Image (cartoon, each protein chain N blue to C red):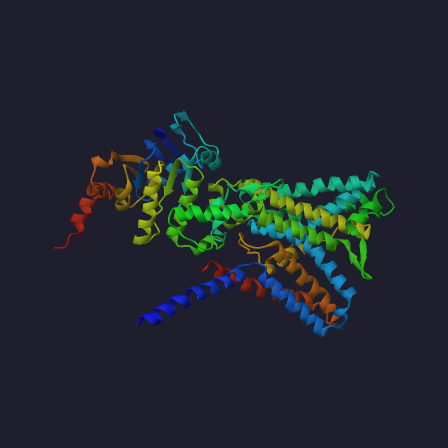
Length: 349
Length: 254
């Protein structure tokens, strides 16, 4: 080999390494796939569904996305920490039932019911985490158990207390107005009415991202999900970390429960079943690995946005709404394959 | 100086005797090699020293005080760090996050992670051990097995370990990478650490060891200093002594 070609090769190689490592870094972002997906779906519905283009439709899409997105944040964090919570959907209903019935039956200021139901929802989260860590049974089974228990208790207790399957209307009770302003009001931006949950959603995503990337606890979340034994060996408090993650799901379930309660004044006791999978799907589309140790809160937000856009877009396009679940299934499969491929690229040298 | 001393330590799992009557010392600036075949009790021994399990009988002295660790964290706080063969690191996490895992640096009133300092420290500490990474942000799973072990060893030394327990650090490595890891094991000893080197490879042990302990079915079979034994004898003992002679005889081709 001549010296000239050697020098040339030496110049070329570092440049190529730099280029692939930049591509690597982009691909290594867990939210990349969901961002691309969200943009594609946005453009798709923008083109085919005329009503989708109106700002009021966008506001509706954002609202629907926020009701999923607020729960998708803690569910994503829990998944990064290597666990599932199948009771998340019915915990939303349980905490709103709890607040409604406590306030109504004892004629309390609704804020008292709101605060006590926060303790209740955190308690459900703690119980899930405690059972998972103590029995070492997979969280899928433990929370399937609490899911069934809550689903049954929601309806049974509501029937027992109020004699029907929904709670009594609490809209004329003390504190309702101020609670409604916090959990379920709207505000105007340029003539478009936006629900306050959209702001809360952004705040929760920001907090979730900050926790994951900027705090010690975030480091521990990735570690307990990625390799629980090595996390334990270097002194990470695995048990406390995982229990806190389950309680985070309880916290947000309480928040969504309060939103539902103050948006509709009354709660249907059978609601919420099946939503736990929608939260998990949003997190998975957003790049969370089912096996834990990888994912992001921002990705889960894009996942929720994809959910909201598809949910509303199908209606705006004038299609049969039944197709929604079909598309959701396709997107889930697609996202999982994409994420697997991305992770292989990221870990491969 | 003796950092850890075990006297007649025993451990049972149910009615299985995992360790029986083990006595050893870990001295500063020395490499104590613990050899043994699979199931000899090597893992149980280090789990007791690193705080994952308790011993049932006998005594473990750390700095002369009888000690029973409640958790790996307690052992770490006493300066006893363990680097496990297969679980040294979290593969999907960046190198610097792995380096500081469990001992994160934080600053400010909100106790946010001091990411810049941690990245810079990781880079410089690894460079000090001869590992040059231009990107500490890459997932540690992208490094080779030997590099990962070295990162884990560098981490333990950086966080002030006085005793470094290495669980089969060379078991899954090729010849060249094993050499690199052994170099860091020797470097740790020269830095004054007491090193416990668990291995089933007598060649690797003899390259760096000052003191050899051979376990067999949970019992101590051999306990001697480097001057008292040759590599051949160590290999022979390791392979089962007389059993090997018999096997050699049996397999001998005419």
